Image (tube, one colour):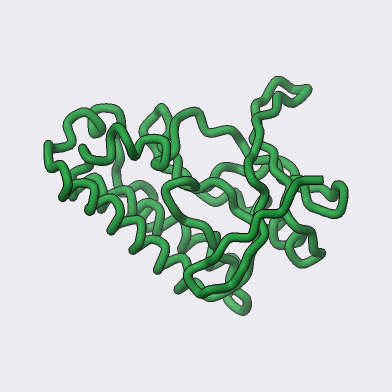
Length: 193
């Protein structure tokens, strides 16, 4: 059983979360990221809905099953790096255009998630530097979805906080973004979808 770590959300609520995820090679040879989250029937059903929807911009959910009083969630491994990992080295290189493109792509993905259920919207709940990945092919991905339901404004506030973090690092060291923009070819992919 994993140890519970309580973290504060922007609304002051406490949400238990696993300390880390781990990479696992499946019998098929596919690499996935596995984590265990608190279990409930509603959360399991929500994650299965997300899995079947295959939302662009989210690491695909491969498997959701009950284990030791929790839910084991396996999502496709994104070959790349998180913005949190990039922060010390590259975030000072982020241009305004790149920051806006990142947040636009993330907001389009979050919007598709919110639209899966208009009555009780599904939210990511943890959009931040740690749960935003840049893949080797230049796409931005949200990872670590937990099947939470709530007010989409929570994700919007998280996106604005992420944008502020990206632009604040630029203000400290405005060198330009040639290095990161060469690594990442972001576009406003699927923004209208």
